[in-house]
Length: 292
Image (cartoon, rainbow, N blue to C red; front, side):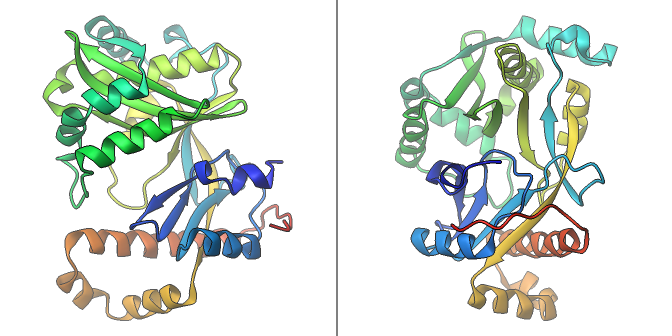
């Protein structure tokens, strides 16, 4: 059982939409959250809604899933695919992976971050000051791990993860598309997983399957020897936002034509999350009442 102080800590939630939406990135939950506790948490954070996963790695298979590596003694030789082992070895030969300091990444990582995120549609790129502020704030946490991947001495990728007890969860990872030929993400995910799983951690979690923007990330993790861990999704929305979503379902097509791309993607993500949450509730799941 995860303590409420951990679940409802600031570090366990990522802010989206200017802080109005909160996404859970804390330790994976078996039990669902009490909605009264979530509502009070949102009031304290002055947010309108929250999305979280629960019943993680459920035996009967939830409607959603995270990507996880929990192979004991994780190593290249334990990866089934011969082609994957070859790709990882080649990536490690062409790249150097090492822990980096948050201050260094804050000062030297912005240009790579901009190139990495330029290929994302409707993505709001942070300013140089905002990027540095976020990285330095994360680096101030003793539970945060920052890894950099260097090709010919130049930053090609980086990943930031947070440790919750025996579990490590990725916060985000980016790579420079100009250096994609060295396949830096193979070296990054492999090295971080190997280091953590061989130093006492039980699992490395890369996060939920995205609600929008499906990519080939699933194939990437399968090749790396990671697996799907089924889970359920729930969300809590303030009543004005619930009303907006209800109306949006009725006039979806006109809204898609009128809304700017970024807001259209946000709306799509919320509608998908709402659908998955409804499907999750139709299936019996473990629940424990929390006092908040």
